[in-house]
Image (cartoon, rainbow, N blue to C red; front, side):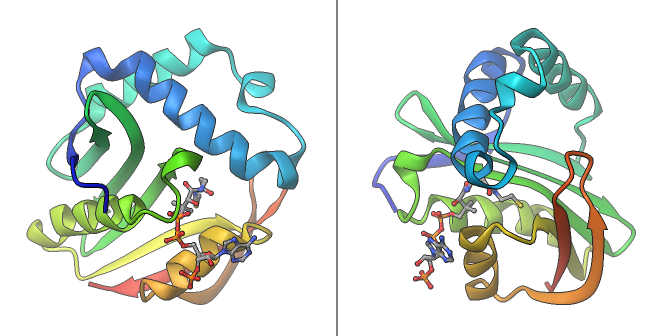
Length: 164
Ligand SMILES: CC(C)(COP(=O)(O)OP(=O)(O)OC[C@H]1O[C@@H](n2cnc3c(N)ncnc32)[C@H](O)[C@@H]1OP(=O)(O)O)[C@@H](O)C(=O)NCCC(=O)NCCS
């Protein structure tokens, strides 16, 4: 892990940097799979609004976490607990920080938060063709549970599960 990366809850003033980091990570993943950038799908203003709406709903059971290297955001994670199951809803790290351990750190922080609230297992959806993400999750102890769905943007998604 980079020496000075820290994880904390997102705040309102993170909006623009959060949206930019999300876009960098999304585009690096999606370009080969979906053939479009995030800016082709949603406006910057619209994405700021979504972040703010998410922050309003954030709670002990629905966290929005960011990883910071100095004063720049290098990754984000969101998760939500429903009973004893936690869903890791987003895990996005900027490409410059891939392979550094930031992703693992963010994921563990998100899962720890939900474990502390009583979650005993976790699920996530990932695009089937997203080989890098799937390899990462499999290394971190997640396994496919057999569920599949079409994502709103088209590509097939598969569900992974992990005991906490
Ligand atoms: C998914 C993500 C968080 C993983 O973090 P990361 O720092 O890149 O992960 P790591 O480098 O620790 O691990 C990636 C693994 O995939 C492997 N890998 C790299 N490219 C690959 C590819 N094209 N196909 C399959 N495996 C690949 C790496 O070798 C590594 O496995 P190993 O450590 O067993 O060798 C990060 O890549 C990311 O933010 N991607 C864009 C957003 C995204 O797709 N998020 C997930 C949405 S569900």
